[in-house]
Length: 591
Image 1 (cartoon, rainbow, N blue to C red):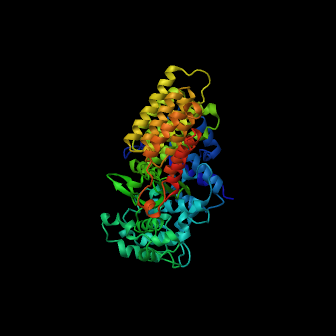
Image 2: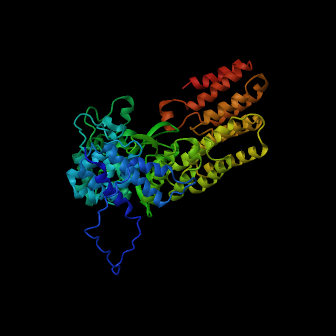
Image 3: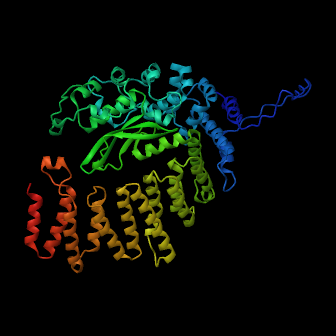
């Protein structure tokens, strides 16, 4: 086994040289050489990962996330990586890594805290195969290493892998990397400067090379306006809806999909693979809308000096407020809005994106509740460095739940996050729900000032979600606020809120049934039967009988309409109005 200290001294020097002040000048006299008779001092043995971790954990209470602390974390993480993975990789890899700060820093952030060998092994494979090409394109190499390294020998792409059947074989990591190098001049995004979390949506491209070449041949000369319509290049295959797709048993190549068409998932798959093959980070997105499940394509584009997300096939009239996308670096699904947030974070400052994540890593290193209590400054500083990174906000919310930060600090957190992330309401709701939910467990009489503060926060959030045109979040907030009103024994106010929300969101597909059910629950029993009948009569007139042309074509009813009618029928039967109940039963059984 190699002695780790011989290598570590070089990398520790490499990490700390940037932080060291430069005091020498051309006029600085040289230090006299030591006399040959003077005893030589033995080189100081570099600190181990354990020593460096102790230094990190010994930082003063309420320590700031300083540049020096960030450098210390990198020294620790590098020493830890070397100790854990030394037998997995050759000495030449570590020597090379010490000279590649862009690759090294991102790798250390990604490896912590598990230090598994997948990502560095993929980096080593790319380094051996492509040499200087990797050094010149560190972000592209990181993207490929993260995607293939986390796959651990399995498929490196997302759940659309069922298209890889028959004559379609995915290229190896090296073959795919070579494709991008060969066609770099026609790629729409820089393979040298685009941050690797976005280039991951190129690295996960499982499209066979010959199909990528087909995509370039057919779309390379298209302008941005034309490319934005690629989703519609596939004509809709209505025959597939009855189990007879026009493509039949033919391979699902890009050319065949273009020729024979498909439904929404094929259209999203086709467009995303065309984009990936042209160097545009893209993904398939799925979600629920007014007419049920659907798939569309989303891709990253530049906006001023940052990045944003565009989409096609996300039909406004079907109200697809959120979608689920595959995020290759974590091999999991997340909201497309969160992918958009990652794009905003690396666009604002890639360096501070890494530093913000380091701040979160440092906070998590304090495992016990008491030590963590004085370390939340790390999270606050991290959020200030790059507010578009979600991790510090989530950890601060959990710190409030765990009573690591005070309720007053938690309320200040709402003010900060609403100002910083007003354009990303999904994260603000996640934080709000996490912090407010424990307050629903009321013991004894609730303080009047506390009630006022909580209701003020809820009302502010409700206005924000309405302004953002996110009725799905507004409905969720109504449920949260109503639960709180019930908990403080304001059931009349809660019922009024549920009835109002049912009325306002009757045409929405998201969460409507939940507020409707809560209203019915508070009107249960003979005492409120008359009010329940009146409420149901109002709602059957509000909820659309059919959701659109597809329902009309198939002669089917809107499920929400049927749901409300069923509730009305139960109330009518309970009131002894059997004739009226049969009348409404016929309305939902007659096509």
